[in-house]
Length: 441
Image 1: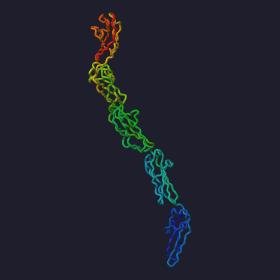
Image 2: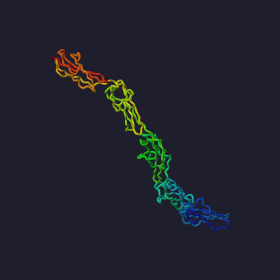
Image 3: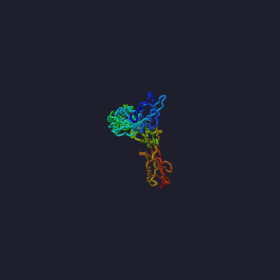
Image 4: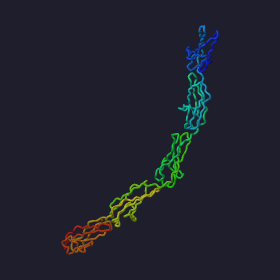
């Protein structure tokens, strides 16, 4: 037999006699008995590598002395040869994301330890040392092979490489489920695209919103706030997934309901100022949104709209006396439902207060000389002014002009003038001048 691991060695005992002679065998490695190796044949194992093998044959027969004979040693035991049938093959689809599996073939004598190395275009793929390999984006366009290496103690290591796969193609992305849209389809309300689960992760996702099938310029984020142009239209979102080594893929959501008008953020207005004739009242609209919102004002007298009173301020007039005032603020914005809010009522409007001045008297206080009452400025104009002259505090009958000529009756007495201002809607008010010097003759 051949002195190598895995090869069977057979003892040729020679002729022993007188026949019959019982023969026993003991195989030895480098002179030491191999436990259990007591047959006429012996197959070298890995532990025998480099050692010489002998066999001792012992003959026994009743009435005869036992005799042992040892063969010459073999050459040193060499490594055996592993066998594989057939060459390794690869199963699976040659595309990114698909698992390729090595079918190593049958190696022997069993057991044989097998190691794997996957290669792309002949170059080892770092870390790809399992019986299976999943193609990645960097493998696109390359062929894949697998080298299977068998090792066993006492046997020469053997490597076999599979035939190459077809060039690796782009893999398909998967998405579950189709994208959906959450939120209320109204102007100013935020809609959110739920993309669904895309894989294998990570996948880069891009978004495009559509208005009745037409792409909306700049609407490329996961959220979208409908604008006035969307009124009555349906909205969809298209999600596009991309990943190196995979075919880019898009999915479009179901359409929303038709977009309706949005709801303005509104506030109840308040009125500041004093509710009296001639005093300015101011409507404070509060905060309306989303800005900008066009605001219109209408003032009401006891619930009836006041003609022309459409500014943020209002000055009560005499017709308002005793009435309560409110202001209605109406907000409008393209794409939004117009909305109005009315303030709480003021107190009943009271009479206004005139602007008044203390009159002065000019001229010389003597009989026959003209004295003139200077009323000063009264307001708001026009104000009706009435005059009454007094002699030492007593009203002078008929002296109710702006001028007065002292008479003999006035001699040695002081004169004053009282100016009374009146205007509809305002409280009548008077002011009296300081006295003149005593009237001279």
